Length: 119
Image 1 (tube, rainbow, N blue to C red):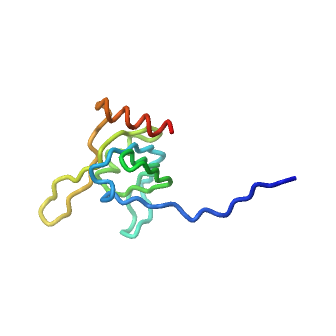
Image 2: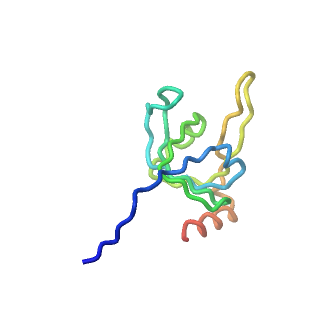
Image 3: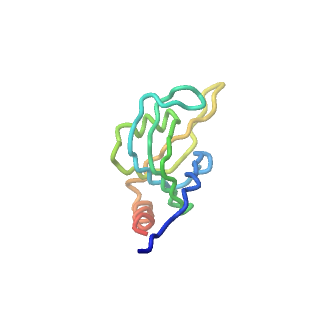
């Protein structure tokens, strides 16, 4: 009998929102955690698969902790969200937040996302 062995995974790449600025993404929202331990203390988080359509890359097992993005995705568990990652306007003394700009009504974006996901 022959066995088809594989070595352990080298880990999962972590995607930074700054690396996705302007990119078309599909976010498979897999879960919401009200209190996840992060380097910044306990924060709400979205567990997701992030498909970078423009970069042709998929990032599995991602924890998204950006508060504006968590807020926009927490009601979308078990859904796929099509959006562009954009930088919002900074409040005085704060950094600009990362936001998701809806792309679900853009026929070209929908076509590109469907083509990528069907590969």
